[in-house]
Image 1 (cartoon, rainbow over the protein chains, first blue to last red):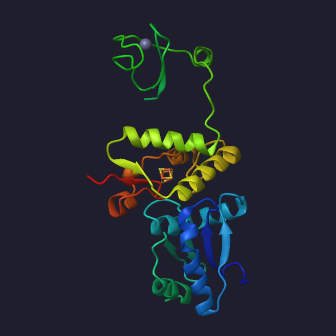
Image 2: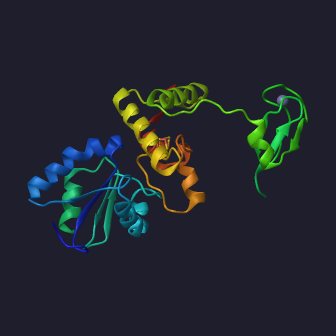
Image 3: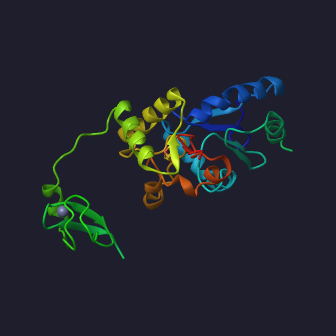
Length: 98
Length: 142
Ligand code: SF4
Ligand SMILES: [Zn+2]
């Protein structure tokens, strides 16, 4: 697992249907790029929730104004993606820092 | 202006808001509301049934959607049940039935806007995709 500051993070919620829907795409991204995202659950782990709040500005911008899940944050580039309709290609760009 | 409690002097209905209702929604009396002391409110109101199971939460959502002209409940029963489980978890852990697909910010005023059902018509997803953030409520096709 990457160090803090160097991670690709997936903020997800255990009871969020869209997080469930996007999981196969996340897994495909991980296997095709041979990487591992940090899967951080936010409703049952306060530390993860706090971390998501720390990155709140970027994430809520990507989510259309609020802190929603599924949300993805690249700690290296500071870029966030949000929602469950992210095409694999876009994911790959985000992960490789383009 | 701050919201406060109002009590119908005919049937003891309690209203919480900036202004009293002109007509009491329960007994129909006009101009019947007087400002009410918060300590009295708890005594005037009888305890009602808790909404503490998935079935009850889903029933509330169904009633809400049925009375609302613009939305309907999502058709996927498993997803609806999953969301009901989520709001109940949040109720148990945080005291309110918060949206399972967004998180609280720590600012109570903002967080109170996350109680389900929220005011989803102001969300981008509602205008663009025709559904609330979690996909629980969808635009009614006409
Ligand atoms: S987005 Fe949907 S599920 Fe979430 S609080 Fe609003 S109405 Fe409920
Ligand atoms: Zn009345």
